[in-house]
Image (cartoon, rainbow, N blue to C red; front, side, top):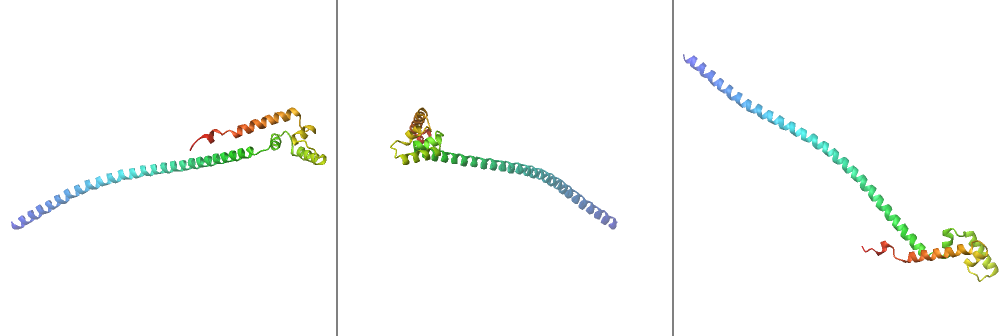
Length: 167
């Protein structure tokens, strides 16, 4: 009888241990299941963030390109403004004869011939008078050129709208 009790006691202890292990493993299985679910959620989030990072990098590249294009446009505009200001300065000091050449009313060859004539004949006439006299330009064309030159000079002497602005 004592062997039976010992065996029954041993079986009871073994069953108790088995139940403890079984309950413990169920808890561990549910914990493992929860951790696997959390891991899957995290992997999905990582993939979404990698996609978003790729989109952000594309947007950054696009914005850099737009910024470079804008900087180039600003630089070109500044060069154009500088060139226009330089041209305005040059026009302020332009003589009437230089204006006649720039406007295409006379050529440099005409001026060379007028100066040669003036030196050869020791003429006291002005270059403008000799241009008319040598029939390189008509009197009315010369008058129109003088009017245009005077109008241009007075327009150049007036401050431009940009010069009137304060910074």
